[in-house]
Image 1 (tube, chains in turn green, red):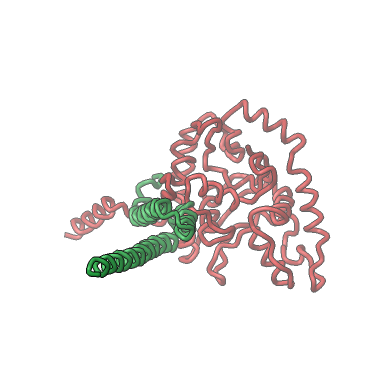
Image 2 (tube, one colour):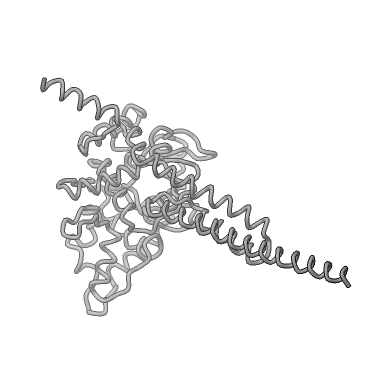
Length: 103
Length: 275
């Protein structure tokens, strides 16, 4: 009887942890995806959005919804890196273009 | 003391890369760069783009121009311009003072609207003001009408005026766009069409920027149809993996304004054929 109780408690614990972990992953993905999207929008507002970033992020969301989490996270990293780099480019070019003017 | 302060300010500006807004000086420097880089090209020949600097391609192009692939688009453009009757009974010629010879009047800076007005924008403004839907900006009917108008401005001199604070600001925005690196490949217009002009990019030769605007709209073999200058801008953006902008966006209009001013003094020779 005691063994059965212990077994039941372990199962309940594992189940709860899995549930919480899945929720945490979803939350983590959503937060990171939103961050990438915000960065992309900021780059777009400055006129420096890259060609494929929006598509990459959209595909990342689709893969996640379809359950292909590894692929989704890989695409999300790409999208995040592109958005970041586009913003850095915008900051660099704020004055950087002047060096290229023909004099 | 005054001299010291002046020198310090001058040195600071020089080191920080401050660029003074002087369109005329920009234009002189821009033209001189290409005159020096391609001394064998007659000044007026820069309107022919890559065909001004590569003899073999020029010969092929001249043969193509004998029976140009934009011929059908021109005929359609003529019909569209002359025979379209708007809902209120007006026609295109009611909007263009110089009728079919109007290309030479564009682009210009409209102080009231505080924006650059290009030929394609004017065509759609005309339509909208007479109760019609605007046309799509990059290809199709607008390119055909634009080609027909360009044909009748062949030989006219590009003479874009940049005066007044707002116009200079638009010019500066266009200049900034031209010289700014963008996209995943980190390229600026200047990288391909100034420093690398005349060099090969795979099987193609990069054309010099001087005179770029004179021959649009163009029939491109890659497109298999006729397209506007802003369609080409989009293509360039896309090739360097930057997000292309919509036709007649402020950025593209300002870029057209800047490039047209750089080509002042050259002749319009559109429409034309490009690879």
